Length: 302
Ligand code: IPE
Ligand code: IPE
Ligand code: MG
Ligand code: MG
Ligand code: MG
Image 1 (cartoon, rainbow, N blue to C red):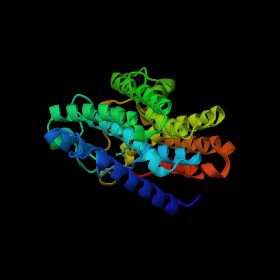
Image 2 (spheres, helix red, strand yellow; image 1 turned 135 degrees about the vertical axis):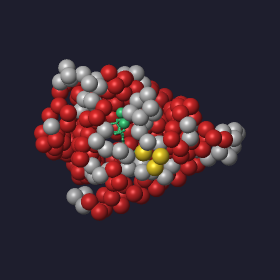
Image 3 (cartoon, rainbow, N blue to C red; image 1 turned 120 degrees about the vertical axis):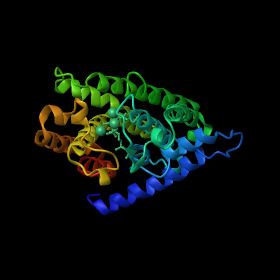
Image 4 (cartoon, rainbow, N blue to C red; image 1 turned 30 degrees about the vertical axis):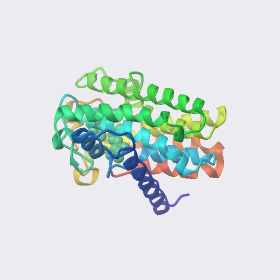
């Protein structure tokens, strides 16, 4: 697909479809739903109308490799975005990174209050699993169960949450080395990106060999994504990135940039981009969109 405008158009189209599905799933007036008042407002505020929607896109495009229609992948895509948004709400809390701006607007605890932000995160976390369990997520209950297990592992104590804990523990720790930072990033960011790709493959009933290739791709991509995030923190424009920058160094965060310096981090990012693209070669031309995704992730400005 080596065509950036075409890729951007596709990302926007899938993003719009994901937005619509999330809007439906988070609507206060769904059948049997309760009026969640401020909590529902905060959950919708956290999820709707923002973000690159990279994880849902990866899920939809990986499923598409195996002929799964976009509409059939949107519930699982919405579920991973709910987890991602919850992780952002909690990441921004004063007890964690203490941020006031996210996606170009006030963070949830700023727009509402801290207790509501904690509960909105909890609500999104649990909603993700409710969505995965729904019959319209996949007709086969065994596939739904597989998705639930995979998302729980990717987002829990041996995945994203575990990575967030290590990220906080590594603050101002001069002992951090490269393997340590790779491990933190693989957990806090890579695990959920890995889930997005794996879930697409599960929906498409990929073979073990295809799954192995896609997992290797996701590992490179996840790392590239967080290296790019760290570089953006060091040199990005807050107005473009949509969140405060130059915070990692001030907080003493352990990142690729803090360990290697900006230039070496950029070199590393290029290498990860090329490795991610090369990993997909055995899948041939049908993996072109995922290859283009790796280029997008490594070159993004926001
Ligand atoms: C930001 O993720 C948090 C990290 C895992 C580094 P994104 O850069 O995907 O955030 P949105 O969804 O586009 O806002
Ligand atoms: C957060 O990483 C990753 C998760 C939310 C799991 P960061 O703390 O670097 O993300 P940003 O920079 O605030 O988006
Ligand atoms: Mg953080
Ligand atoms: Mg943060
Ligand atoms: Mg960051």
